[in-house]
Amino acid sequence: MSTIEGTATPVMTTGRVVNAYREEARAECLRYLRNPGFLLPTLLFPSVFYLMFGIFLGHANSVDAPRYLLASYGTFGVMAPGLFGFGVSLALERDTGLLTLKRALPMPPGAYLLGKMCMALLVAAIVSVILLCLAIFLAGVSLPPSRIAAFFAVEVLGVLPFAALGLLVGTLVKGQGAPGIVNLIYLPMAFLSGLWFPLSVMPAFLQSIAPLWPAYHLNRLALSALGLGQGGDALHVMVLAGFTIAFVLLATRRLRRHG
Image (cartoon, rainbow, N blue to C red):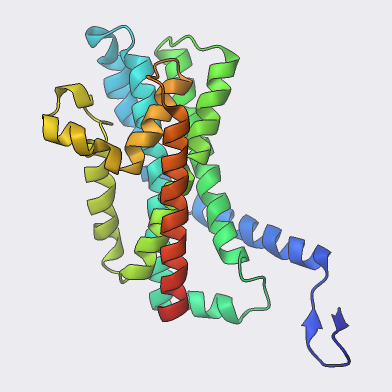
């Protein structure tokens, strides 16, 4: 540890900064992996829904239903770690003073958010692997390695817009009300984005507003990765990137003003 121009201000070396980021990410991942109240619903809900509707009932409706619903429930599954892992936890940590304590610690300012992002990416990866295993080994979905890799990448990276949205929600609501508010965002968005029912069977008005939701665009990309796309992938990527940047900027501004 060195000093600047003879002052007592400590300067962290590059190695110490990297280690601080790594340890914060490791601690955040372990904390959530050891929390059954967060982990079990996040992993079980999309898996059980896919097992019921994509496997047991899927073949009765359409040959492609298991593949179609893999995209839908994959998107539904990766929404949760972003919204709940960021939204609910940040709101609670603001209320309990943990966020204030984190800021007072001698750690890089971005380590806290990076740790949560790594946690969300890890859980999204686990959800994607579970659903892929169910689709391939139980539903008999035939996918070449390139499509498996594309679907996995889309779903894991697709958690980022919802992490950004969760970050914004966590800056706006109190800890006790956060779970209810997040559910009011999570479940209606899934429905309005066509994750539970195809948009084609929904009223025209709901079809017209579906592109307003990030889940719609992620689901389009997931369908494309599985060979069921309708084009416009670049547009969906740009929209999701726009959502992510906008939510992060709004959340950052809110945190600077109100903490």
